[in-house]
Length: 135
Image (tube, rainbow, N blue to C red; front, side):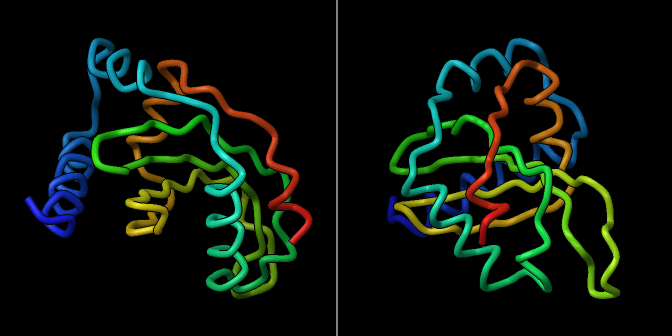
């Protein structure tokens, strides 16, 4: 299968998880068994995404980053909790952001998706992410 096909398949699996609205404890344990500490390189990709795509990346506060769920063929899923200002200049409250990476590129970005929340609820570790607060 070509890289693009694997990327689509990974997206479909994540989308199905989100659309079903639940994840079994067994499935969560399986996914969490592939978790490892997020690398500096992946953190830099996420920081650059914030820098280039957020209305006010300098306003990011209370940031936490999860361990990385590592899949086949370079696929990764990383969750980030953060609070930042919206387009009206007001803090919107903490939100959970999901990043999907393939071969060190961000291919999907979702805010407030259930898949990250469910994995956090099942034990996905979160760590302080001060680099995001110092953009």
